[in-house]
View 1: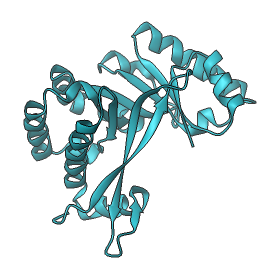
View 2 (view 1 turned 30 degrees about the vertical axis):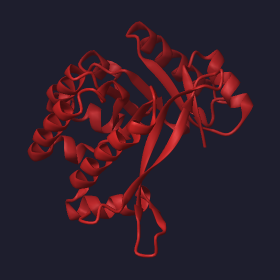
View 3 (view 1 turned 120 degrees about the vertical axis):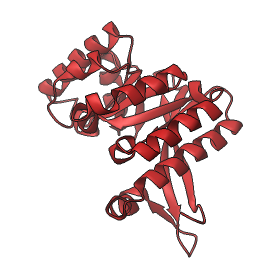
View 4 (view 1 turned 45 degrees about the vertical axis):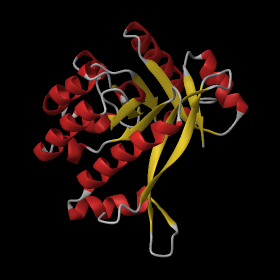
Length: 219
């Protein structure tokens, strides 16, 4: 952390014409041998060590640096619930929003559906502040757990990112197709975009397009 040995791996989100709509930023750490370490490996230890909020701060700062090289594309970055529930991080985030207000329309704060549904009242005010500074809010891992979508009535959300467990089986699983179709209906009513993740084939992409999904990511 002191050496700021982190970088962002940007993964494109495409519309169904093949255009890049936005990027997902995956934080990676550079070790002593200059090898890249996935966040899936170091984040659990960061959580145990209580430094995850510092990594989230570094990630947001890296996003603003990346935006200097992008014209109009947006970048989403996951902010962990540990950070959002931390008073010091919240104060830092408000200062960050004020400092980078010109960039905020291109910044997407990503929070997992599970964490959001269990902490709606606690994070609602902070996410309102994000929106006040024209930032964007994305709910990720949608469909991983069975939850009441009523949380969408309490949080101003711009986009919903489907979990790959839903999209991966969408070709042959009628329940997953029904879930996607229902979610798209809810999202359309609230002018939210629905993004599919973890796609491997053109058949999956085409099926999700017909179900009304707005954009997708490949594996």
